[in-house]
Length: 274
Image 1 (cartoon, rainbow, N blue to C red):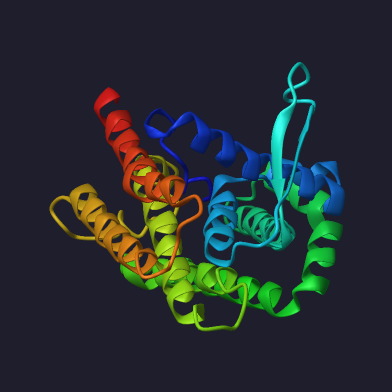
Image 2 (spheres, rainbow, N blue to C red):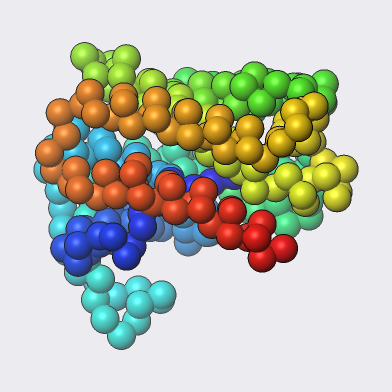
């Protein structure tokens, strides 16, 4: 369900792409340092967006350096880390664990169960650091599972639960920005859930798996899904524009106004190919 909040590389300046990769690599390195190599398999772009947004808003002191890794053994890569990187790494582990657990419970996917077991100690460690976040993530995913078992026909009801889950993750501090950040997280979460559901409509129908759009009686379910996604995207962009973002604002704009739209276009392209 993750990896939908990303850049459109072709529209970024070289310097911006270099910085984005720096935050991404910083998260990867932080996962390894704090949770071990296995946790790096859970790395996703959504948490990189979280780091970018929070770093732009709070402007913490960055630690920057260049280093080689297994993925890039021949050339050193820029690494950018700060206090938000560590927070995002913990959220990344918690989300990935409970997502894999949900996949196992819903689809009895053996791979998800294996990853879930491998991440259990990391989840417990992250949960001990942020017990309230861990409890809320678990609670919201259970609510989603309940709605899915009820075969809910309301995409808003199900996506709202994932929106509330992400809402908690986007609260890094309890300060004057909390109200706006909660809305940013909420609409980002709804977008992620709804686009994932849109992309999986045919697969879920074929496998007889739950999908809120497949349960609808609308004439053009896919068109309705796209309109709902675009509506939430407009709400997301409106909330982000309320924040005093300067640092890396170009990258954030690229994600919201180009990268996310590119993801939606890619779903359309896949449909046309089919």
